[in-house]
Image (cartoon, helix red, strand yellow):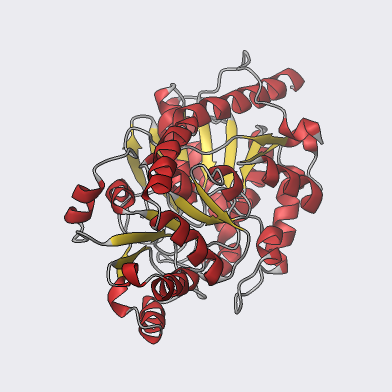
Amino acid sequence: MEEAYRPVQQRGPARVERIAVVSVHTCPLDQPGIGDSGGMNVYVRSVARRLAEMGVEVDVFTRAAGPEQHVVDVDPGVRVVHLEAGPDAPVDKEELPRYLYEFHGSMMRFEAEEAARLGLSTPIYNVVHSHYWLSGSIGRFASERWGVPLVQSFHTLGRVKNRTLADGDRPEPAARIAGEQRVVQAADCILAPTIGEAADLVTLYGADPRAVRVVAPGVDTEVFTPGDRARAKAELGLTDRVVVLFVGRLQPLKQPEAAVQALADLADRNPELRDRLSLVVVGGPSGRGGVQPEALAKLAADLGISSALRLEGTVPHDEMPRYFRAADVTVIPSRSESFGLVAIEASACGTPVIASDVGGLRVAVRDGVTGLLVPSFDPAAYADALARVLTDPVVAGAMGTAGSQFARRFDWRRASIDLLAVYEELSGRFENSS
């Protein structure tokens, strides 16, 4: 098992010039917090930008879902290519498998046309990197067609999600589990954000430990930085409020209802805080089973804290630092998280984090140092943790300071350097075997 967690190798002699990134179900240009857009969107765009800074050209392939431009130049060396596959409109994730064959055909045509335009022989890409299991199906075919290595990032795993379903949440379908299994067996390298997920890939999916590598995501430490909390609150109209922040898609997995219930419990137990508490919720509904903002508002009304709930909807990612700076604490009551970028972004802004003791949150939060991990899904347990931080300014200040320092370990440039080392090792291995 130790081989699954070996450090990334030093960069080898193979020169990786172009990468094909596959993100079928969500475009990296979509705003996180809308529909299926979330941490994966941030990951794909952030890594692509840093790889391009190192001289690697990146094409990100996604499904055309509207009147967007076919090819969008996002950053120097980074393009997002919208491919025809199914209706020219948003499609539920559950319906996407029927359009994968068409997506693959569009992707092959684009590559052939680019090769002709550049006067190069095919393939023009050195590596295929697919994100999420649906993209892995495309990555398998592209890798075989072009004779290049396939790198897979799942971001979430169906079997892991099914172990900790929220009440009323639907289990991930058998088709997804089977699809993940096929991709695990086909990929030349499977990336995991933590050692815990690496172990899940081996024990739950039978992944070859030698094919699993741990490369942690990052945070833009030049954008997500500590700031003046009072000023940030004033900018958001939260002056003199005690701010609890929830950031994420509104879905049962993320448990936004638990955040509302925890705030109500906190208010009941701490009368001195009750009239000053604000729960700021950033994010929108996700998928068919998404939690509607109206349901959260009704829950808050039933619990007697309507005035404390502020539903912000979705917010552009580059505007998120001021929300984290305004927050006295960020709460993440998720039932599972592959990593938990929100926790690292909050910490980078000097905000303590209260999070579930699950998955990647055990890495993203240092329990008792940058925040608290809650070993229960009971809202009362989150209320206990919130009280420990919000009623003790010394503890809160120490956690915020420790968090901003801890977050510097997670940097997109470092993650991209490690990722490029994986690409070059695999590419070199393929060249030597041909």
